[in-house]
Amino acid sequence: METLDWKNLPFGYMKTDYNVRCVYKDGKWGKLEVSASEYIDIHIAATGLHYGQEAFEGLKAYMGKDGKVRLFRWEENAKRMLASADGIKMAQVTVEMFREAIFKVINLNRKFVPPYGSGATLYVRPLLYGSGPEVGVKPALEYTFIVFVTPVGPYFKEGIKPVNMLICRDIDRAAPLGTGTFKVGGNYAASMRAIIAAKNGGYSSTIFLDSKEKKYIDECGPANFFGIKGNTYVTPKSESILGSITNMSLIEIAGSLGMKTERRQVPVEELAEFSETGACGTAAVITPIAKIVDPDKNKIYEYCKDGKPGAVSMKLYEKLIAIQCGDAEDTFGWISIVE
Image (cartoon, rainbow, N blue to C red):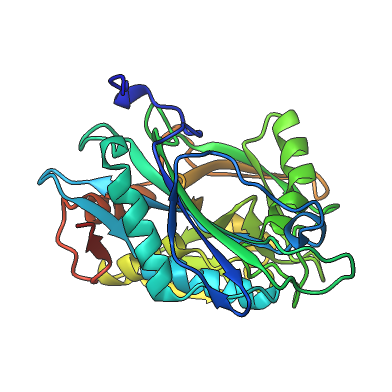
């Protein structure tokens, strides 16, 4: 392959050599197969196309200074995919099969793992969908599991940059007791109207409120929300938001640094009491928020007034990144070496 400009990679898709696939048929999973094709042959009546039987995950492989490739908390991704599959009644991929697939696809594409210090990583995307045909609304009898990888650049090319966000009240991403807690494509499709409207207005993303009462913070577009209040890390508790593995990890890191942590309902008005706010997820790890605009209440909540990320957010970010890249001791047992 041509030498890639690792330091200038976009955060987007790039073809790699191989992906791995497996089909669930006749009540059991087949063998894992290797493919060099970027395409899938799918039945026109597949439930993944018609009835939204689709779930996915996202995780990254990191090259360490020691030349070892590290995966961060992949078991949590496996467990979340199991929960998503159960949530929309698909065949579940076992944790063992999930591990075999992601380790295999990384090893097959090792030359695409960006070098240490480039700021880039290898993004791993497991995908599960109903590939069996059904015209009636019911679960398929056949499912396909695919894992592909692509090298991606850092989410923020020029370093972490605070962004502005817009509170949305007229569009809901998910409802309580619905599919909001599962990582399924339909939730992202439901969020796009609001996200595009926010971007068209000059904002980075939207902040969704709870769909029942419109009183509490739910999510920041496709990411979890957090706020810093004194020495406390606060993040929403809700029946309609996806459990973020990054957020889960930041909570543990905050605790290890002597901070208090709270997962609870966060009223919109409490935004005025935070010294820092941010979004967190696999893509950017932490996205500091500079300003939150609430057009319906004619309010603006401002943070990062000097244009720089908050000190606490940066401390949490640097600690997590150091663990992921192998620059800090993994006292939590989060890292797996890909061999």
